[in-house]
Image (cartoon, rainbow, N blue to C red; front, top):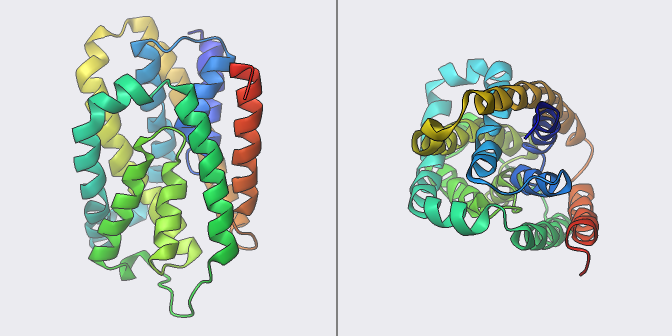
Length: 258
């Protein structure tokens, strides 16, 4: 992987990590378009590069990490994902990450599900409007929704946001909780991968990771600001439509056929 390719993938990660369109799926597909094979380093890169996006959340929401009430709910939300992710780590990295068919079907079906959900979802008047008001059972349930995103292409953001809306949270509340919940989730996923594979990385590969990290950090901060502004007046149907169109376009370009 060249530094230019790392920069491109960092930008892709920064744009897609917090939008409900699947960052992992886009990284896998973008890697395919760039002609990068799914080596062990490439698979690790697609996990580790998310640290840049997570750093942007810490930068923008650092005060929230000093609120004990928020931290307790993040811990509750992380528990299901942590257990499921650890149990299925080897299966996911061996058989799921790098599988373009899984990514494309997940993008397509997830887009349909997002559109159908938004057409029928009605926010209740008593929907919870602060992260501190989220109950622990709700936080745990959101964690289970998040764990669905171990399947590449599902989108961690989409899974947690839809789960939170179903559980009676206001749109802004679950979007911000999704941002914050990404921090322990992605730190754990990245830490586990680095623990297992960092010793095999060369110094050049660490430089490649650094370029992707910086690009991801800068672009993700802008992406967060964009999404918060977008949800004030819009639902997620445009993202659902994009997922369907992207799945079709990628299928034609990468696989050459439906």
